[in-house]
Image (cartoon, rainbow, N blue to C red):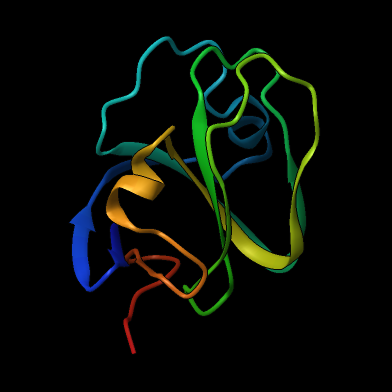
Length: 124
């Protein structure tokens, strides 16, 4: 997966959470995640998505992605083990979770682009 932010491309090695079970477990119970690793949660139709950090031991940045591959919003530095609901705030097609601090480090903001061969194949 490639994130295009602040005029630069950043390549990430991401796992796909495509099934209901994979999406339910996500990054729970993990104790580490590399700075250029993450997990993509794609959904078949845009909808308001809600996430939480139950049983998730590492802080994450959650990047909410619209159907066209643009970033809708970023929730930075989520609190490990929290059951607070984190909402996309509007219909989106996916969430990308990366280690906390990465979004700010590379300049991910609303309007940044995500390119991934299956779900967001092109950059316009």
